[in-house]
Length: 231
Image 1 (spheres, helix red, strand yellow):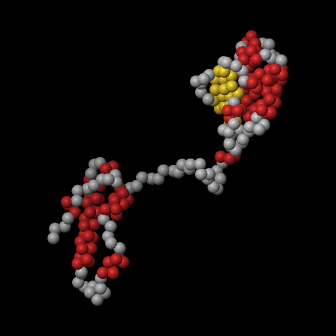
Image 2 (cartoon, rainbow, N blue to C red; image 1 turned 135 degrees about the vertical axis):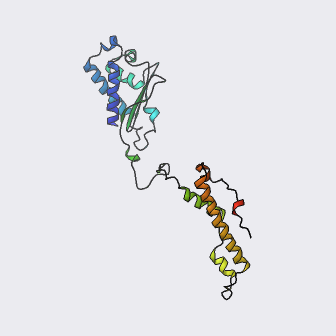
Image 3 (cartoon, rainbow, N blue to C red; image 1 turned 45 degrees about the vertical axis):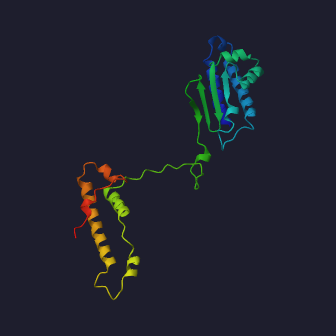
């Protein structure tokens, strides 16, 4: 917390130096230095029970320093200790100013529609890589290389035509009748021929078709009239 407050108060004093020239001339470097030390003490006491390094966004609104029509109470309190009126302090800051003092980060914005600028930032130890990844942490994995046409065709081929398992076929065949093919075995041989011709058709389509992306689409259907075997 000390480092964040140090960076925040130094920036506040720099804004005061660049503020109204007529008002800034009333404050010496020594007065600005003392004002910064008073603000450091006020912020340290103010943030004492609202500082959560493990969850930096918690209490961010409470720790926010805001100037919008009126000066933030912390700066008014520091000015009161220094004997400075709130109007003098207000004139030395932008009319619209917001500063967020959070664990591991200090940021600010000038104007209601201005960009948020990072003034100070350090690594949050809780965000370092650990052996176990929290459930709310997403890991972006590297993209896998695109599948080659042969892999896509093979996957498509296996989805469309799948032969029955050998164990199921052996259950229907008799060991003594292995010379003459049974009707089920003939049907299986015909299925194998259709599979081979189907595979060749897919390969020819992949190599001759100019639009190769269509071949790789899961819903792509090839004409099947070429696959039938004349009896």
